[in-house]
Image (spheres, one colour):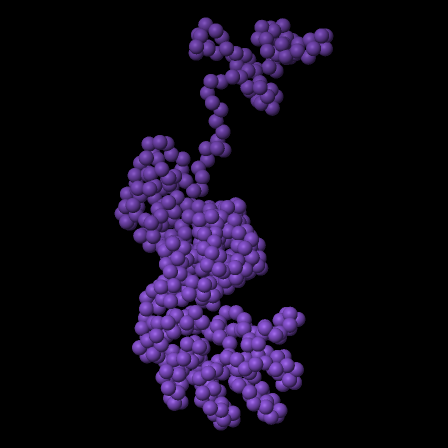
Length: 516
């Protein structure tokens, strides 16, 4: 207690105004004179002023009813200019709105938006956007962009977009297509999306291209639609390494919901007989198939194929060979081509359906391209009826280059000296390379002194051809295989081949694809 009393006693002495008369003369001369102030609430009560106004000497301040003001929080910001009162703000808002109306901008949507305090700042924003290439109409489409500070929002965002590959000349078009990007934070929103795309194996030089095609990606949440769509595609067999090229080709897939868009398409195509592994390969090469509308495009096109005579069990093969067919205006194309085949090539609707099953790309093939090989065959003296049979059996004929057909035909006539009937029976002859297959194999046959049909020595692998020359086994003569695109050729006599031979890589013959 004595120590506590000793500590409090000096404070009691200093705060008691009556004690000053008992102090020695030296202390009274040092301390400032004590003044009494009248309490405004009670005039009779005296209020003492602190004898230590310097806070370094005494840290406690007397209580005051007025709030403490901190000048550093009242400094005007760079963006908003001078701090204004309520009345001044209303006046300046009216002036700015009048300015916007005078240049054709409708300020209705800016009522609840914080806008600059001066017309000069607003004019600077408008002129900056116009220099980017935006028009007044573009600004009216999204007037909220006028709430973005040029220095704090617009310049950092555009600088980052240019850094990731969007040219400065395209910046205005990018902002026009996705003006919400001006509100985005570079560090919090834009950088994570770009890192996500790089994590999907999208090449660095393709980032700008992807974002220009689908700028809304910058507004997606990483843990939302983008992640789930990628995870689902991988789950059905898409190679994770192919996700990057798929996104580059068709970035819209990252914005598709699995439950309402992707999965229904997959389920429907699987119901037609397409395995998921085949679908995965289709999506890897042509990701835009995911953008076809199931109810309005895919299902009507499948029914259209069936209505034109394509067998229901062959629809899956048609789609696998030519996936784009489910997204075309198919009824019009099929009607046009069917009429053309019937009128010019003398192929009836039933034969036309067989042609489509074997080469569905014909629905998109130009009629002038089709007629060139046909005219060549007719010019060689082959009757129109036989030409029609050849096309039905091997539709690839109508997509071949006439120059190559001429070389193969002249070799057939001059070197091989075979009757035209063999070409009619095996039109696939024109689809084989003259230099790499036809000539070498024919010369081997000549050296052996044997003679077989075109199908026997052409429609087989190199290994099988050698085995045939050695006469290890004899195959019965049969019709040539049906020449369909998109899968393996079924060789005649394959039933006698052992399992080991079937597994040989040399035995795998892929159907020839024709780029249209």
